[in-house]
Image (cartoon, rainbow, N blue to C red; front, side, top):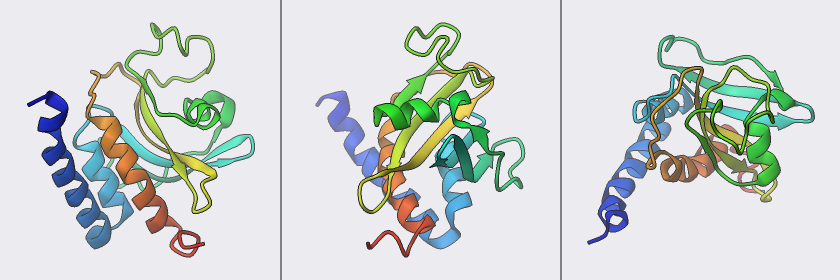
Length: 163
């Protein structure tokens, strides 16, 4: 059996656990669930708003009482690249990653993010892990983030999710 086939049952279990946490305990607890699987300090949902990136919900591993982070100019975020490319982005060390070197002026060193689409398929924002320190790459983070993104949007914007 290939590694990918071996990970399928684990992924299904984790998606189920995530969905259950989201439904029973809410978005912040669901972000905590996602964060406990990664070495990154932060896990957040961010919304595109013109030239600003708005934080909707944030989980900080070292300050779990924090529910929301700061908004940031779009040009200073890796989320802007996810939105522009409409594709997931994983950066282990921004200082050595030639794909992003010099593109974004940010203190974020490690980043793993996916696009969140609204009910019409338009780019809404991102779901991401990030850290100001270098984090070990984890190939299992992106698939769960991608599965979680749509569920989180429906939970965050229940009236828009059925449009």
